[in-house]
Structure formats: C-alpha cells, structure tokens
Length: 231
Image (cartoon, rainbow, N blue to C red; front, side, top):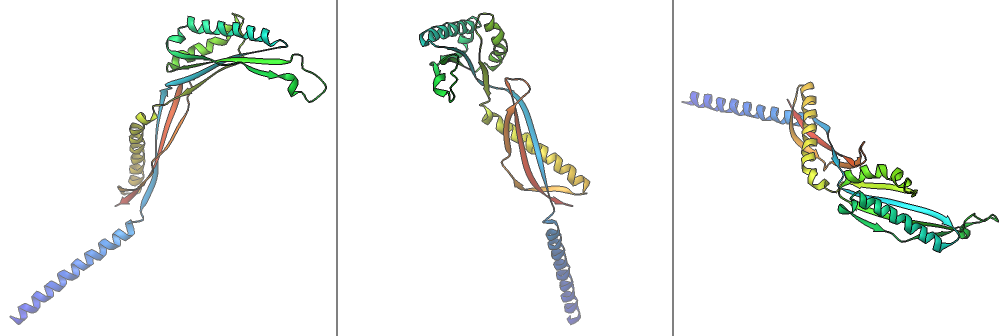
C-alpha cells in the first residue's frame, strides 16, 4: 500500500508540474503577444448634393449725386428681381434685398489727387434656398443674362453647405471601420497572424470639402484603429 501511495503522490506531482508548465507557457505566450499590435486607418468617402445655398448678387455704381445713384441702383435691383421671378426662383427661395452700402471716396484719399467720382454705392440681394442644383445652374448664366438687360454684376457668389452630416455619420463610420478591418486582416495574413481585439479606436476625423461640381460636397471620414494580433 505504501508503494501505491508513493506512486499516486508521484503522479499527482507530475500532473501538477505539467499544469504549472502549461500555465507558465500560456503566460509567456500572452506576455509575448501582448505588444503585437497593428494600427490601421480606414477611409470612407461620399459625394453628396449640398442642401443649402446662399447666393449673393450685387451691383455697384459711382457718381457725385446720391439721389441719382439710389434711383439707378433701385432700377438695376428691380431688373435682377424680375430675372429671378422669371426663372421661378422666388418659388423655392427666400430673396432679401439689402440696404445701400455707401463709400465716400473723398474721405479715403491721402494725397492731393481727388477721385473722379465722390461716391461708390452698392446694393445687393441674398438668395437663400435648399434647391442647390437649380441655383447653381442659374448662377452660371446670371452674369451674361443680366448684362444683356443692362445690369453688370460686381459680385455673383454662392456658398453651398451640407447640413445633414449627422444623418450620414453612422453609415460612413461603419464603412470606415470595415475598411480599417480589411487592411488589418491583410497585414495579419502577411505576418502569418490573425487579428484579435480592438485595442484602441478614435472617433474618426471628419471633413466636408468642395467637390468637382459646384453644388456638391465631398464628405470624408478617416478612422484610426489599433488591433491586437495572435498566432
């Protein structure tokens, strides 16, 4: 019996040493692999139509008689308003006529030479609309069309905005993360590993820039993600 007892004790000791060895190996493997990481970037891009536009049109004339300048500018503004009405802009936009902007040219002269005309007077219109495509097409033709009617624009500028980014954000974040994971998987395959867990992930970098077409915007999301690797 004593002999069998010693055999059992030896077997238990052997099993204990084996388990201890496995634990140590696992710990060493974990220690070895804990710094095996890969950091990748995922990109998602989408071209969208802007959903808001502010179009500014203005005319400027110079002269010595303010009353005459006011009458002249009012007449030009009336022509612009009629042009917008004829093109049904007023149905899809808010049109605002701004006050006169007056510059006394004599007050800005620092030499003995006086300007030819004392006053420069400007009047402008703002067109705000959500139909960005319509405004873009009309804006491109406005300068020539109004010149034929006797109106020379000194400003014909439109600012396009995309305001619905928050609605697009979840979808684009998913696309950016999927792109990052694909890159990480390719890296892992090349290093004979597999990706494990996400160790770090940022909120992503978002940007909205002008696209090739005036009324469109390019929305861009870049996500930076760090994955752990395992054999």
